Image 1 (cartoon, rainbow, N blue to C red):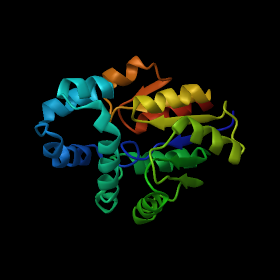
Image 2: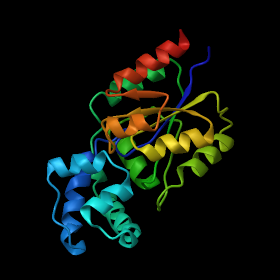
Image 3: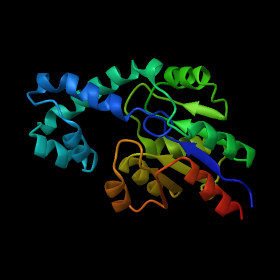
Length: 212
């Protein structure tokens, strides 16, 4: 059987960025009239749908789009500080040796993706697609599948948020949800991903099982 094409999300999947999210959110919190979150509260937010979390935090929903944009812009400045998640390099090496083609699709900018890939010498990807705005992942997945001639039965998407799972399902492709990013395993599993993993090495084992 032909090795699958693995399409990765970036932030929280390839890049170990979750702790930066808390720092940035807390930096902006006073401007929106909410108290900075402690670790326990942040874990609560990670386990909930966005609108439910906003309700509990008493954050006005109408302010959410502007706040998300500000957080994303600030986060993108942190690319020079980001590191690959522990085990990602070894995972990518093994997947490449198994014949997998791989790519990155992210709401981060292409400039940041290229910097991170080159800086950390992660030259495993056939391409990396970024955007300057919030990414419509379903639309982008379908567009890149068409652009690169990738059959939907051949591709597996890997991401850390429930919107990654939803986008993959709407695109008709398999999805691996990772628990080391933004959303917790409890929330991810409710969206019924094809696979749920807690370490990059488990992705290698999934591919091995597909090829067996």
